[in-house]
Length: 191
Image (cartoon, rainbow, N blue to C red):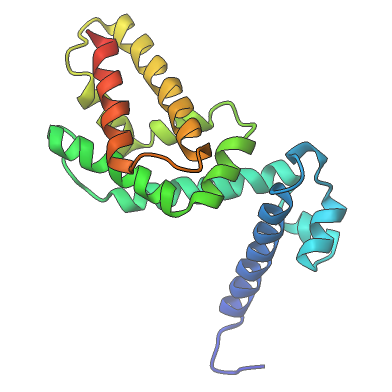
C-alpha cells in the first residue's frame, strides 16, 4: 500500500480503470457484433473482469452505452467553450467545432451514431445547451412558436441523418463544408 496516496483516490482510479476496460471492450465488440447480441459474459471476458464487477457499475450493456454516449456529449460540450451564439460567424464556428470533434473521433462517433438505440440521442447532441442556442440563432427568421418548434425538431433529426450519412462515407467533405450544408438547410427550412 502506498501510504502517501489516500485510499479514496486509489479506489476512484480502480473504478475509472474498470470502466475504461469495459468501454474499450464494448467498443471493440460493437465493431463486429450488433448491440443487442453482445452478452455481458462476452463483454466481461473481453474486458478481463468478472460479471460481478460489471454489475457493480452498470445494469446492462445499454447502461454502458448510455455512459459512453454521455461522456461523448460532455466532451463535445466542453470543447465548445463560451462563444457567442447570437453571432452568426460564431454559430458556424461552433457547429464546425462539433463536427471536427466527431471527425477526429471517427471510430467512436460511427459506433455511437450507428448503434445508438436511444431515440433521444439526436436531440441530446443537437440540444446540448450550447448547440441548442446555435440552432435557435440559425432560425432567427422563424417567429411563429408552433412552426419554430416543428422546424427545430425537423432540423435536429434531419441534421442527425446528415451527420450519420457524412460519418459513414469513406471520403467525405470537410467539417466546415458539412457545417455550411447543415446550417444552410436549417435556414432554408424556416423561410
